Every structure is written in C-alpha cells, then in structure tokens.
Length: 347
Ligand SMILES: NC(=O)c1ccc[n+]([C@@H]2O[C@H](COP(=O)([O-])OP(=O)(O)OC[C@H]3O[C@@H](n4cnc5c(N)ncnc54)[C@H](O)[C@@H]3O)[C@@H](O)[C@H]2O)c1
Image (cartoon, rainbow, N blue to C red; front, side, top):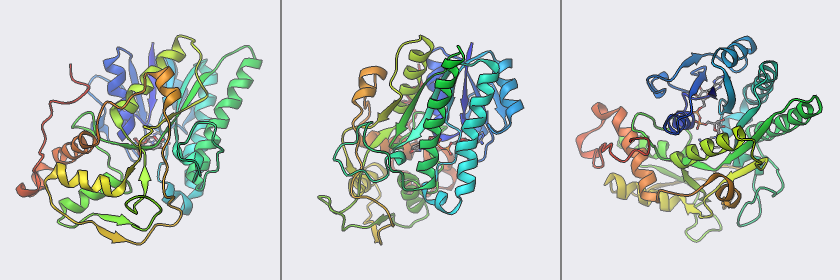
C-alpha cells in the first residue's frame, strides 16, 4: 500500500515525501512540474509526471500503485498573482481538487490530507488565530483553498451516505520556511526568505515592505514554521487517518509565536554573515499587521511541535539555497556555506 503525494516535486511536497520514506510509508509522486523540480524527488520514489486535472492518469496511478491515501499539495500558491489570474488559480486549486476527489471515489481511495492555508482566514482581527475564527479570504488563492476544504467535506458526507467513506483532514499552513534536505529549497520568487537570499546573492539588499505597521518594530508579524516540522505533521495525519482514528476537519500548523520581518532580516544577517540594512519599500496593499496562529489542536493530535529555532530555520534555507548555486556565489557571500549534517531525514 502506498500514499500518493500530489505536488511531491515541490518545496513542501518533497519534504513530505522524505518524511514519509523515513516513517516507512511508501510515497508515489504525481506532479506536473509547473513549479516543481524532478530532482527534488528522491531516488527510488516512483514519479509520475502529469496533472491532477488528468482524471485518467490520476485514476490509473491510484490503481497501479495500490494507493491507500493521498496527500494533496499540488496547487498554485501565489496569493498576489491569483488576484490577476483567478481563473488559473481556480482551475488548479478548485477543479484540481474536484478532479482528484472524483478519481479517488472511482478507485475507492478513502484517506485524504489536504494542503490548506492561513489565507482562508484573510486578515483576522484576533491576536491568535484558532481554527474556528471566521474564514474571510481576501484573494482568489485563499478562496480556492477554502472551497477545496468545502469540496472535501461535502464529498465525505456524500460518500458516507453511499455507504463508502472518505476520511480527511486539512492542514492550514502559515509561513513555511527552512529546508530539511540541502537538495530541496523554496524556489518561490514571492516568499520572504527566497527574495532576501536572491537580493543578497546578486549583491543587492533585501526589501522590507512597510515599517509603519502597528507592531513593536513597525514591520509585519507573521508565523514562521520549519518545513520539516510541517512535513512531520503530514505523516502523523496520514497515520491517524489510515488507522481510522478521529481527526479534526482542519488544523492550524501555527507556532503561537510571531516574528517580525525585521527580526527575520536580523537572523538573515547573522546566519549569512552579510551585514546589510534592509531597504524600506512602500507597504503592499492588504498586508495585515499581524497573523499568528495557535497550533494547539495539531500539538494534541499530530505531535506538532517547533523543533527548530529561528536561526536554524534561516540557516537551513540559506544552506540549501547556496548548495544549488555554489558555483555562482561569490566566495565572500558563502559564509554559512553548506554543512549538510543536520538534515532531519538523515539516519
Ligand atoms: N509555501 C507556503 O508557505 C505555503 C503556505 C500555505 C499553503 N501552501 C500550500 O502548500 C502546497 C505546496 O506549496 P509549496 O510551497 O510546496 O509550493 P510549490 O509550488 O513548490 O509546490 C506545488 C507543487 O505542485 C505542483 N503542481 C501544481 N499544479 C499541479 C497540477 N495541476 N498537477 C500536478 N502537480 C501540480 C507543482 O509543480 C509543484 O511541484 C500548495 O498547495 C500551497 O498552496 C504553501
């Protein structure tokens, strides 16, 4: 029996794949490589190149690999871009989830872990976001994730009425950073750490968007979590579902601890050894002062915990980024150059 990891060639999916291998589960990757990388899939893990929108391919893959459950990470994750490309976002995230559910029902696959997002909450006006905070997404991306959760819930109700079953849970991620394997890094052109690293590697200084927010140092506060911890929560969720144990419909993978953009920049300077003063750019529209979540339900059910302090999150991300481009990086900018002995996926 195996687990299908859609989006398993992406940043988070590739970590989920490694965590599953380490836990003795058998992952199979389905990915269309629209933003993923074939080299992120570890040797020995079956890789099917294709889209979740391809019903026949998904059905065949579920059947051929005797899949018992799916971790559905495939999707389009750029909230800002989704405002300009709502149809694309809905096709990938909503139609993609619908098509996957259809194929799962056809083959009788009854377990699903869904990659949801903090974006379902929009801009919550509470200091700590719990799962029951009203969902008011402010982008097509956030809407598409919320609709994904609804689709799964509705399909589970329909399956139960038909005497079948769909056990499921959604994991709502906040700001996922770091690397658990130097082969895999976040290649997003929009996320804070990749943007900061690209600026430094090209001899520029990173930008902070706005320093006049209502926070102690004036910069936005967000909830940063290490990707290896996020991956471990997926394994725990998959194991609970496969064992038929009860789960919540959704879990926040939050740290309960906000960090400001300025604190992240200070950590980047410490870890890289590059002394810089970030450029202050204008605020980005719609950026709230603070979003921080509790992870209490996940801690209770999914053994969710923060195993890595801030500098370790930043260091692992930097090392993985530098490892892919050592040849391109000026020697004086390689301060923390790759020491690969801290991977949580190593025996
Ligand atoms: N990175 C974050 O901080 C964050 C936060 C909240 C939620 N998420 C969600 O987590 C999931 C994974 O994010 P990530 O950061 O690893 O992004 P990513 O872009 O690195 O990974 C997404 C993967 O899905 C693949 N993919 C996209 N559309 C596909 C399709 N139709 N069929 C098959 N494969 C497809 C891509 O090629 C890529 O490998 C996404 O669903 C994203 O919305 C990420």
